[in-house]
Each structure stands twice: as C-alpha cells, then as structure tokens.
Image (tube, rainbow, N blue to C red; front, side):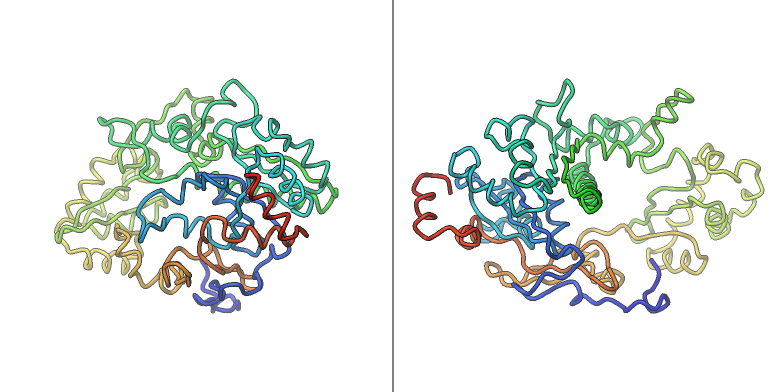
Length: 419
C-alpha cells in the first residue's frame, strides 16, 4: 500500500477508525439501514462490514435462540468474545419471525430499510409470509441478500450448508495439505469470510443499480461459489489441459522457491518468489547465483519443476541463521520474506501498529476490548467502530419505539411471544 504521506492523503491513525460509542456514524454508507436476520457467519459478517462504513445495522435474533456465534469459542465471564467482533456497530433486537406479530413488525422494519440479509434455507422466509414478494411489496427499493450454502435453486439448494462444506466442495481442501497427507480444512471460517466479503460487494452493486433504476433486487449468494473463484484458474486448466492441481504442501505448483523454512533459533519464516527478479535475489543471497542462468529459471513453471533443488538451497542457508538475521539479510537484498507469527506476535508487530490494524473498543460488559479494525482506510470518508457486540435484544424497545409502537403495544407483543 502506498504511504499516505507520499500520496498526499492524510496519514490515518487508530482513532480515525474508532469512534466514541453512540457517536454519529462515520463513513460513506451513512444513511443506509440494514436488517441482519442471518446467523453463522457469512451473512452476519457481511452486515458487520456494511456497518463499519456507516450503515445502521439492526441485528434481529430469535427471542430464545440467539445467534449461535454468541456461544462459539472462548468466553469471558459468560460473555462470548466472537460476538463482540461479529456484532460490532449493530443494534440488537429480538423478534420471532415465524410469529404473526413478529412478521408484521419485520414488514414494518423492511418498509424503511435498504437491505435485508438472511441465510435461512430456501423457502423458509416464504413459509413465514416474508418472501421477496411480500418484502418488495412494502418496499420496492429493498435489496434482499440471501446467503446459503448452495444457492436458491438446484439439486442441493435445500441441504444444510456451512463453510466447511464449501471448503470441501470447492476444491480447496483437495489442494491443501502435504502430498502424502489427507485433504486439509482450514481451522477457521475461510469460506464464510470470503462469502461475507463477496456479499457486501454484491449488496453495494445492487444498491448502485438501485440508484439508476429505483428498484431493489435479490442477491443470491452460495457459499460454494466465492471460494471457488479465489482458487484461481483451476477450471481453465482442467478445461484446456485436463490438469488437476495436486497437493504440494507449502510449495507452490507455479513458482519456486516458495515455502516455510525453519531458522537456527527454532523460528519459522515464509519466502515468496513469484517474480523472477525476486527469485534471483534470493538465490544470490543464499550463495547459489549460478542457477539464475539456467534456462528453466526464467519462468515460474520452470522453477517449480526444480523446487527440490531450490528449496534445499534456501532452507540450508536459513537453517544456519537466526530469524532476525534472516529477516535483515532478506530486507537488505530486497527479497520477499516474512516471519510466521502467532497471534501474540501479530498484536505486537510495529507494522500492524502503524496501520492501526488492531484497535481498542470500549465495551459496557468487558471494559475495553481489542479487535481487528475496519478493513481499509478511506482518506475522506473513513469507517469506524462505534461499539462492540451488544447483549441479546438490548435495543428491542428502542427500535420498536422508533417504528411508532407504544409501550403497551410492545408489552403486548412480548406477552404474545413475538419478542
């Protein structure tokens, strides 16, 4: 990324992207209202990303079955920490969408909303009388983002769908792991996160189209598709060459040297040489300049065929030096290297600190929490984290009062089981 001081843009600070709780929304999406009906994890994260840049997000959860992310992973004092990240910048309310009273409230909310994000199995909203026909009737400008495992149609549409299944079916797991080992799944929600980024992009595209046409539309996003796209040109390779990418461990099938290497002090570093010029610098640094003149060295594919020789040369050199020495030597040689961090080192790294990548967010339940900041810096209309995930249903009465419901009406809905 270009240094803002060189481009003329102001240098952002952590405070640029962390606003005081309850302060006006900062960002280019200010004025948009998003209803987040989704759970686990792509849909809710997409709504979070929209909220980070100013959208007003209302998280709607079942009165007795909150978003399961509140109970995923470690907790502190009984409070789910994952939710603090996923629920940031969202007001929370409870609503039973299958209850007639809950349905009526949702339609009233949708009438004043710009976006609804949901991830129920296809047909569920329709069964509750909340399908696209009903939603668009009360608000023709609405964008309905439907995030499911397999999309809204096709032979698998009604199957339960989770990110793990997308990681398996997309081909990701088949190419991940050591050559003689089993297919490997990521230990985090990779497919969900990619789908969340894609959903937020799709929503913005639909909103831009609405600017031109005045009409909303449905976004149909299947978890199995975005991760397939980020895997690169594998369909092309298979279509044109019959090529099926094998598992290569940390090596690349396209370039070399590219691997993880252990240093003399027991640490690990990663080396990448996608460009021939960088590969040449690495080989000069490790004392093997003669390979640069080999005809096969000129292409990534050629270097990949000689990965064993190149990996051995790089690995042997790195094994003789401590991590600090390796990093310093590679930096001096303008070769690409990075230390392999765990989260403790991420939190202490000066580059992340300079970017404000981890920020402090005040929280009524836990005091101050540290979490990832908004995804990128905008010089004129930056995003902001205004608060961390709030308790289940904390804003129900406030949201309903904003619709014009009286205290008596709210009490009646609660007594009836709609809230």
